[in-house]
Length: 318
Image (tube, rainbow, N blue to C red; front, side, top):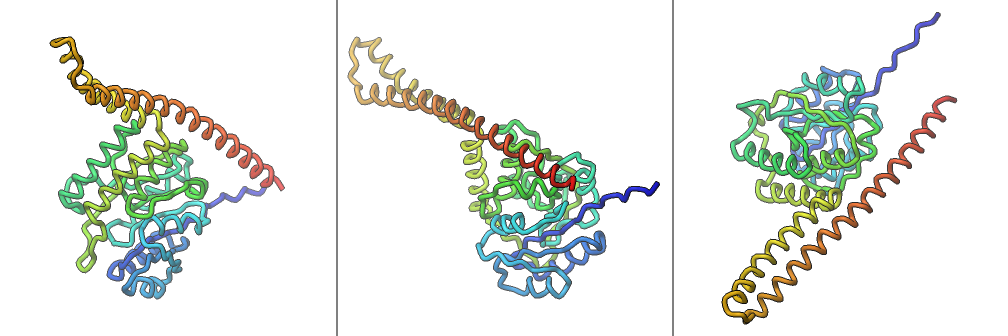
C-alpha cells in the first residue's frame, strides 16, 4: 500500500519596511537561512533610501504600498499574500529568525490562528524605559476593557494561518495596526497565543519611526474606537455611567439647596443635572440596542462562514 504523502504548508515571510536600508539585507539573509523554501516579500512603504533596491538585490520580491503608514503596508500584505502560513516581521533587525520555528509550530498543529512573539518577558535589552512603560499602559487598558491577559500587543513578529489573515478586516493606517489586529481577532473568535522570543536593540544606523505621543494617542484611540464598535454595551455603559454620576453630582447641589431653603434657586444647575441623567440613561439604552445588533451581525457572519466552508470542503472532493 502506497504511503500517503504528508502535506507541507507553504510559508511566506512578509517584511513591512520604511527606510530600513541598513538592516533589511540581514533580515532577508537570516530568514532565508532558516526557511530556504519560503518566499520572502518586502512591502516597501515609500522608502526614501535604498531599502527596496537592497532587498531586491538580496532576492526578495518587492511590493510597493504608496499610502504612508505601517497599517496600510500590512493591509496590502493581507490582500496580496496567499501562503498557508504567513510570517510577518519588522525589517529593523530587532527580531531573531531562529525563533520562527516556535511561532510556526502552533499554526501547523492547529493550536492557534495567530502566534505573537512576546518580547516583554525579557527584563533587559531592546526597550527604553518609556517604550516599556507605554506598552504596559496599552496592555493594561486592553486587558481590562476586553477581559484578556495578553503581554505584548505591539509585537511586530507574528505567524498567521491563511484563513486568519485573509479574513481579518483592518482599517488602521499606522503603528496602531497591531492593536487593531489583536482586537479584531478577539472579536471574531480566533485563537491567539503568545510565545516568548528574543529581542534586541536596533543596530547602529537604524532608527525608530515611532512618534511616542502621536502613535501612543492613536493606539489609545484605536482601543476606544474598537471598544465602541465591538463591545458597545461596555462602552456605552461606562459612558452613560459617567453622565449619570455627573448628573447626580449637580443634582445633589440642588437637592441640598431645596432641603435647606425649601426653594430651588439654581434652576440652570437643576436643568443640567436632569439633562446629564437623561443622556446617561439614553447612552445605556443605546448600548443595549447596538449590542443586540452586533450579536445578530456576528450570527450572520458565522452562518455565511460555515456555508462558505462547506462549499470549499465539497469542492475539494473533486
